[in-house]
Image (cartoon, rainbow, N blue to C red; front, side):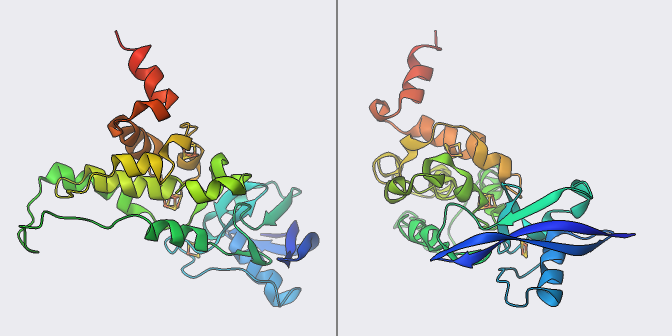
Length: 248
Ligand code: SF4
Ligand code: F3S
Ligand code: FES
C-alpha cells in the first residue's frame, strides 16, 4: 500500500529560510528519513540532512517532526494520519548550517569542560575493582547515543541563548552524575556541577527524559541524585524545599 503524504520541510541556511511544501510517496513500513531520502532523490536533490546508521544508534538524524524532537530514522510514518501535514524542521536550540543540519558543537564544547575519570593515583590500570551493582548503575547512562535531543529540548537553553554559557545540559550533567557515582572516581564534582555546569538551572521538568530515544531516566536516575549530592543548598531552592519542608 502506498499513498501521497503532504510534507512541509524547512529549507534555508544561517541567513534565513522558509518552509516548503512537497507531496511525496509513502510505502508500508517507511520512516520519516525514508521520505526525506525520497525527496532528495525526486524533488530536492540538494536537501541537506545528517544521518548515518538508519538504526537509531548513531544519533545523527535528530530533527523536529511536527515540533517534537525525534530521530528521523526511528519515526514511523504509520504514527501519522495519511492526510496530516508533516512538518520537518531542524533542531531549534542549535544554529542551522543548512536545511535540516544544525551545528551541534555546543555539545562537544560542554563535553570537553568536564574533567575526565579520575582514579586513585595509587591504583594502576588493571587494578581497578568494582562491585557489580556499581557497574550496572552506570550502564544506563552509557546507552547514550549523543543524539542531543535532550539538549535540544531542555527549556533552560531552548529559547535562551544567554544560558548556554552557564549550563552543560542534561546529557552532560548526567555525565557528571555518572562520574560522581563512580566508586573509583576520586574527584569531587559537586561544587563544579553547581557553580560551573549549571545544575541549579535544572528545575526537573523531565522533558529531557521524555524525548530520549534510549529511554534513559536522565532526571530520576542522574539529575535528581546529583542534586541530592550537591552540598551547597543555597543555590538550589528545590533541594532546600525538599529538605526543609517535606521532611519531618
Ligand atoms: Fe540522546 Fe538520550 Fe543521550 Fe540525551 S541522554 S543525548 S536524548 S541518547
Ligand atoms: Fe532541563 Fe531535563 Fe532539567 S529538561 S530542566 S535538564 S529535567
Ligand atoms: Fe543513526 Fe538515525 S541515522 S540514529
